[in-house]
Length: 355
Image 1: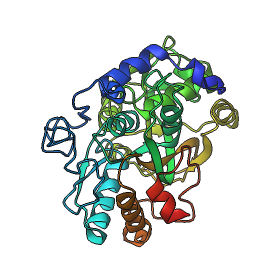
Image 2: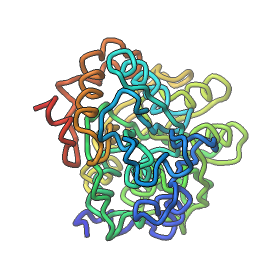
Image 3: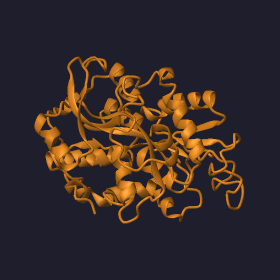
């Protein structure tokens, strides 16, 4: 088990319920298709068969082992209101323009769900948070992974800070995390990295557990709608600023972002080493003119160990040799920083490129 105090104090019941909803049980091989279900489509696993294979044993190359140009790369992103989905779309264009691989990007519930999809082979690449990657690979910290490490999870590259936004309804009169006691708080999708971070921060910095507030769980876009409609007092959104759903919200209604105190940020860092101090610059969102102090984790690209090393090397090279073609997170994504905060071992193909 983790020697990080917060790993042992996260609300096990809530996160286990989230993991079940996300289909993470497929990690253990007890799911037939492990589909991400993030957008409810019938092709979200990127395959032409219900179990991610069009043959009895996947020997047609659907696991990427043959590296053939006909293999579709199944890339799992996140919700459409966050940063993962549009950034993955840009990666798709770069990969298809610079390799022989076609790419299919799927909208999902993000980090925890994506780990499950990599674990059971329904995804080839995915975007996840570095803290969730650590939990999954080491089999600790979350009930979804506790005692059942995702042995085939491998890293490719870290990308950019995933900033914790604590959005506030101005009428709630909240000036600190402890003020959220007794309030309605959306902590993100069940089982998502956002929920993990929200519960970590609330307990570390304010001593609050799910017994102390009314927890609600939706994706970024729905959380923004809840704030707009006055249905919640606060909502956690984790993503590289500017987050699309927050930008849209700020243009249509008054919203605040909690300015975390030095003590709150220190408490979060003390309990979870993957948190780092971060600042959302004033003017990032309409109506929020002052800098907002908060914390962040790292977004990263992950894959699975059995996926073709040649394919992983080709994809990694395509992305990092063409970062000038990106329009999202251009100040952060680079070869030089691509291993900063890497919390799990690299895939052989990524190691070939970076080492």
